[in-house]
Length: 331
Image (cartoon, rainbow, N blue to C red; front, side, top):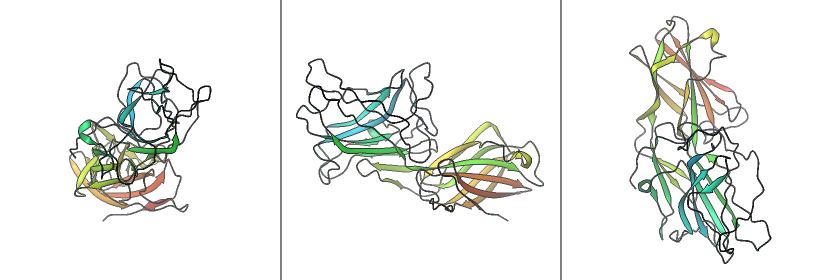
């Protein structure tokens, strides 16, 4: 399966929950016998951009209005999660857009089967091109591939209660997609400690022990990574990220975030500031409430304190799950 970089995509948090539901409506086709599929995603809506656009890179907290290719859906007819033959999708990898009011619709209108047989839906985001999507076969489930760069918020949901066309005069149920995150999110703060110069800016902050080749099984939702764990993904800026004085540490906002493979808890970190490369590592830990360190949909804040020529890292779980702290020191 050929893989290419996805630049525009979605951001990281715990599983996205519905912020509100609209009553589903029956949408008659011109011939009066076909019923359109009208998806909802259960997300709050942000301000509409002035022009239609693809999703921006970074974490996703809401699907924006007036935006194309928010997510893609594959549907099977008659049975959920076929266990052996995946070749007969009712429709395959169809994109969903939002209009100026935030309402969702398929790029190519999809209809329920006229025989009222039920449909089962599998959705993912960010959308990939044809070369990175593999349709199901007689022996293999449909799959999606990415080469991640730290900006993707890979999300997945299956809606498999089974929905079929209902009789005339009855409100037509519609699929609602409440997405869950498949990556972990790492936020960074940079703090000036004892013996470190004031006003220094870092031009890059990277994780250097990452796998970047990701593949999603669209039926099971399993996201797997391949390749060597020696790839670098992270943040960079020509202007640089200010290393904030310690007195301002509590009020300082994170400089940005990186989204990467879930499950891995040891982070090797490389920071470049004023042409000097600093290296450190930190091990993420579970909090007292039992939130697993590095799990999918979990966000960690990593604070890097520069002391002389050292970096003293600390890490804590934040945003999606409020939690305790872990810390480490390098010599």
